Amino acid sequence: MKPSRGLAALAVAAAAATMIMTPADAKTGAASTDSVRYSWIKSCGKKEPKSPCGGWKLTMRSGRTIKLTDARVNPKQAGGKVDKSSTTMFAISGDGRFVSYIRGDKLVIRDVNRGQVRPLPGKAADLPKGLDQSGVDPMISPDGSIVVVDYFDDAEKLPTLVADLKTGKVAKLPAKNNVMSFSPDGRHLLTGRFTDDNITEFAVFDIDGHETSRQVVPQIVSNNSPVALADDGTTVALIVTGASSKPRLRTYDLSSDTVSDAVPLGMPKNESAQRLYWDSAGTLTLWNTSGNDEGTVVSAVKRTVNAETGATRKLDSFTVRADPWTWWLPGE
Image (tube, rainbow, N blue to C red; front, side):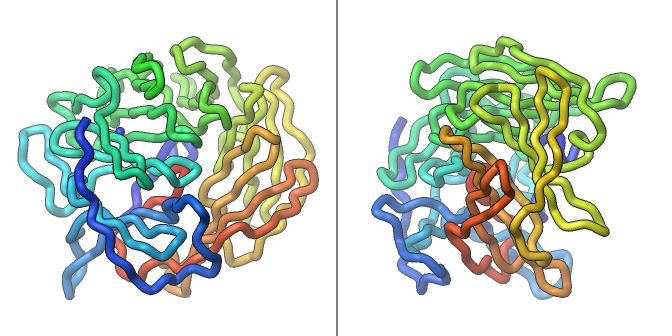
């Protein structure tokens, strides 16, 4: 029941969050500042199809579970009716310290450790009239300073909004471009779109909405995911997968339209790449998931990746609840 984001599958008052202590299913200890491992909503019902029930919850690295009692679960449809068979979208910053969701009829962002909640700046907080709330998709920069809001309107006329939480400024991106990745500093955004000729075009914008790079990309880039934009605004890392080969890491240079040689990626066969992003030092972070025989995701692993060698090092791993209707990892 988990929706997809981006082209690869082509957020003032603080509300009280309820914290409940649960046995930690973690394999690593709590950090000095707690962070979100994943957000989720429970599924209910004895027969299929099951329905989402309860509220949004955050499973933390410390083992705590935080109930977000102010977060909307079921989206309103364009006509005002609540769709109890679906859920709103949700976003977690890459560092796991901020989340964005719908509260009432506004998009807000929450500092998870402080419990502070505030609406996004300007029009970014508003939910467009005539659009299902399930079509409002926030995405947070790695450090929580920028929130992008994509809209899934059929006519593709609603521009993507880029909200700078430090300055309060809101910029616009072309409606047909889907945001796929932030640069580590959050100052550049990698987007993608299908052209009229049914080919894939990547474009990079700064947070003021100015285009800095554009390129029709080769199929080896457009057909693989996840992807990640580096701080230089032109280098894109991607995971290449195939039925008969192990996952490999490549980089693509938007400015020169060149693809690097592939390097083997150090990850087990039973894992699937879920999310990828750079840090300011040039190291990649990769989130993987693994499933059971029925194809249900049962665990997640966070690793660093050496971009030159493909070598990985485990940072965190945990078991995912057995009954979520939907769930989101940091960076999603």
